[in-house]
Image (cartoon, rainbow, N blue to C red; front, side, top):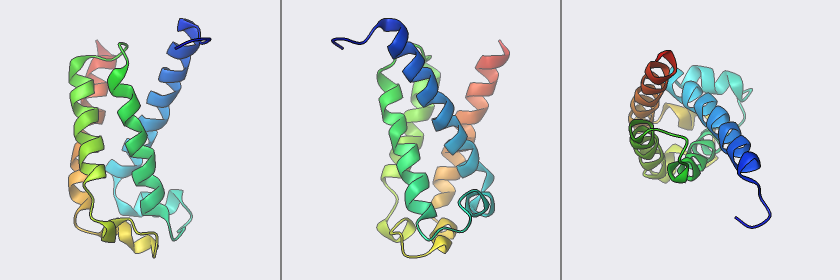
Length: 120
């Protein structure tokens, strides 16, 4: 990218990963934590989905292993595939929609893979 140093880009991607991982942690923990984190905001499901979709930018970063990229791609994919009823922004209870189970599973798999890599 023109005008952006490699160091700035690296810092930006590390920041993106930090916030993506935090959103994954909230998603993996289940709807009760997500509701608590959002103070019961009616659009909590929509906001969490949006935060997970941002992970797509991480797929183009050379600072991640292929395993983490695969886990991120899976998580982004299941978040993108959520039916509108699971995130329409009508009610905070949307986080309890059954389709969020796939998101929670993918988030957990990403977090486990990340933890394993950080331990090495």
